[in-house]
Length: 607
Image (tube, rainbow, N blue to C red; front, side, top):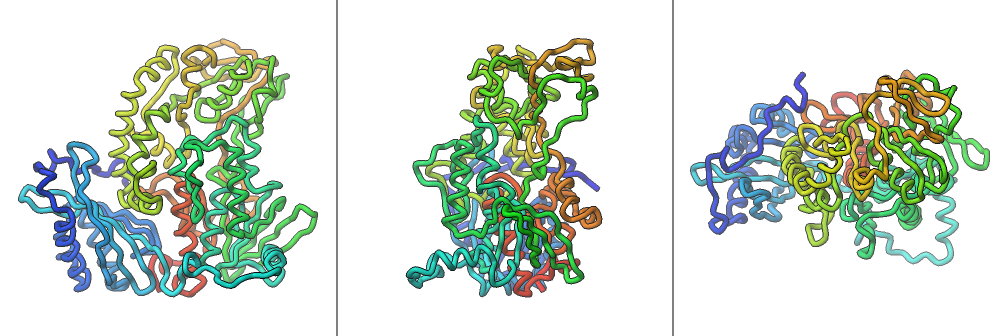
């Protein structure tokens, strides 16, 4: 099997195409209309040869639930042919409508026409985008096309004009309490975890009339942010992080403090009337012969309830909130304090002590910076090289074309982003990363002078490529890097740790470090720990590998079929949760309405 990195990936540069374009001569609407009309007619007549004649040989087709119940990326007309042969006769797409078209030049050597459109299938209304590139004969041909399910026919979201129009005098509070407690029956869907991923999909399901319960172990919604280290602040900008239906207000700061986000999540759950049981824990989930679930929930008041639900969604994060601490010999000998970053609160806790942080990514830098602010002697231990990008230089370059003040609406930005296959996105990101590194040259050179090792991400594609493959391992600098350069945050990275000593660590080169506190900023372990505890080893073994890229460049398993019927993963950053929570909800609704089978090869297609 080929890996995503081995696929022949290339941006359609003007040099590679052998063309030049005079922007003033391009009538984007006219070109797009002509091409799109031909595409629509060929699809209507099921003329696959005609369809493929409208695309370059190395074209891309990305589908999210519109033509299959999967996330697929097909590269090259031979793969696209097989895909269309499998899907078009059954799906019979119709009602194609061009919404908009514009000429874009992301870089001087790149030019395309971006078209936005809608279409229908028997069971769904869909959206899409395409990109046309110039040809040497003065024409335009298809390079990328995206098909995305937006709505199930007959089952629209209950928002806007479909909201509840009836007044409610004096009954609302009692009705909400009854609904939240599921007095009259069990929920259809149970979500494990009440962070942004769980709340997003709960909101989506609520507006599709699917009874849903969120079970959250913490005392309050938002506590997973509220009780992390006090210095924690989001490194993604506000435009990237909106939640479904209820965006942050226009006065919201660009970078959100964790405690502020915690309060917003709590408000979000209340405002959208989501059913959440806090101080509650799912201890067991057993699937029956009908692929439904008996879920045992232990509540904060000591009571236990077994709920019979159709679907279980795990929204517990990529690592299942299981802190990872490397197994280092001699730990029992060490006389100081050992803790993981998830249990750290503030630098005030260790004033007057020496702290040694194992790790060199986001948490390590945030916590070390906070220690410096409180006068604590702190050292970072760098095990591997780290991707460093300043948010000042990097964020406008990486995200500013879509998620920024004055750009396109959030929902459009999400779909434009998805319309460019991941592996092509990373080709563009390589350019953005290189530009950012040049802008950060003084910062990076300063780090290198003190021995801090850096890299540019997988293939030079930066932090987003790292996120897709390992979920972290980078630091988006908001000031800690300068503290490393200035020596205020000390650095150790010249030898591997050999063992704990009574007073700190011994390293393989014989050197030692003394520390009163050893703090592991080493990320999270596998979600398998939590899965096996709740589902059992047999069911967990049936779940497909989660995260990382498959051979088509799609993230594995998240947001769709997991290998276990009616079991779902909802995870990712705030943007991915906002966008893909709709995909999860639509699949669950389709199963509940008999549109989609919950297991087997039929899961990929409409029934």
